[in-house]
Each structure stands twice: as structure tokens, then as C-alpha cells.
Length: 288
Ligand SMILES: Nc1nc2c(ncn2[C@@H]2O[C@H](COP(=O)(O)OP(=O)(O)OP(=O)(O)O)[C@@H](O)[C@H]2O)c(=O)[nH]1
Ligand SMILES: [Mg+2]
Image (tube, rainbow, N blue to C red):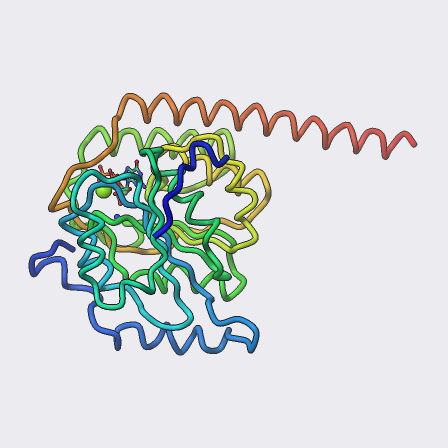
């Protein structure tokens, strides 16, 4: 286990209902066969799964037990200085020594955890997934396939394209719709489930996401804007979303709203500036 202070260095329940999707190795057989076709002699790890973790002692173990385990898949857990029993729960999982476990010295946010995870990822495609039991490992294949098939660079899980067994707070839905409209109107992006943390991206996007300024939950919005401004292909893919049955949401709504709007403003100005540069180049090219 690595202890790390990123500040200095630069998410089915445990009860029966949650176990309705994936479970057994054979559920991933199709994905394993598919990954085999992308394997080459030099490289064995094709898929890196990054798991941001903060005080999820009731769910982390069952999530790890549900994940695909195969030589082409690596699992990276970023414990953001949990104060509960999460780390001990990880140690109860069979073969836990194969996980890459990194512990931040201080709690430094959801986005920062993903950024740390990217530094340890060796796969061609990277998946980020919550550890609170709201996401199902059986949807990983939906997210990574368009990337391996060369149809997208960045995929975002959407409960609206899939299904949800989730009592969505009205404030969350309103916020989501508002951000959806902003993204559409100011950036030409159409993503309904825009705050969902179940995502996948090609490793070529790592340097771009490393530059992120918003290290909490606004990182989800920033990633979309970064990818769009760099002209990467973004695709929403169906996933299932479940209720959080244990623990608590770490979101502080007021703080998140402020950060998201600051993020939208900064990237709108950036877009404006980039367009200006493009226009100047075109005029220069026309005159000379
Ligand atoms: N590493 C790290 N992970 C975090 C932090 N805060 C939350 N997480 C993880 O991020 C995931 C999502 O956290 P939640 O608070 O449930 O946020 P959410 O699922 O987007 O929002 P809800 O719909 O309200 O549950 C979970 O796996 C958390 O353990 C943090 O500060 N650091
Ligand atoms: Mg959650």
C-alpha cells in the first residue's frame, strides 16, 4: 500500500437486491474474450479500474468481490484518508494483494483521487467507478467497448439510457437539468446524466485530465469540458444506478454548485479565447 499526499504532489446493496447484476466470473466471460482480442505480446493489462474511496466500509468489500479479476484488468483503490474500517475491509477480499492500494495522507477530494489513480494506471482504457454500491460492475463492458472499438474517446454512464432504482433528490435532478442546459447551450454538449462518476476513457486523455483544476466533485463537469474543448469524442452509455443503502453522500450541495458554475465560466472563457486564436490564424492565413 502506498501512502501519498497528492496535495503536495502536485460508487446493489450488500443485501439481496444489490446482487442482482454481476457476481460470478462467468458474467465477465464475454468481456474477457473481447479483451483477449485486443491483447498483444508486449502488454497484458488493458483495463484499469480506479475506485475513489472515502469511508465506505459497508460496501467496499462486496464491490471488490464483484469486479472482474483477470490478467488484463488491474484494480486501483484510492483511499482518501478514510477514518472508518474501509481499509480493513479491503484486506478481507481474496487476493487483495493484487490490488494497487494508495492512501492519501489527507482527504483531498473525489477528483484528486481519480487523478492519483491515473498515475498508477497502466491499462489502455481507464474506468472510474464509485465504491458506495450505486454502480454495477456488470456495466463496465458497456463503457469500455466503444473506446476499444474506436468509436469514442470518453464514455459516461447514463441511468437514463439504462435504468435506475434510485430515489433521486429533487435538488439533484434540478441541478443536473440546469447543468445539462448550460452544457448544451454554451458548449454544444448533450449529456443528461452529467454528474455520474461511472466513466471510461482512453489513456491518451490522462495528460489532459491531469491538468484539472477542480479536485472535488466538479471534476466530473471539468472532465467533460476538457474533453470537448480538445475535440475528443464523448458518448453516453447505458448503466444501472442503485440507491445508496449504506453510508452517506459526501456531496455538499452549495459548495458543489459554486464549483460547477466557476468551472463552466472558466471553460467558457477558455473556449472564447481558443475561438479567437482560431479566427486570427484564419485571417493571417488569408492575408499572407
Ligand atoms: N477518494 C475520495 N473518494 C471520495 C471522496 N468523496 C466521495 N468519494 C467517493 O466518491 C464516490 C461517490 O461519492 P458520493 O458521496 O456517494 O457521491 P455521488 O454518488 O456522486 O452522489 P449521491 O447520488 O448523493 O450518492 C464514492 O465512492 C465515495 O466513496 C473523497 O473526498 N475522496
Ligand atoms: Mg453515491
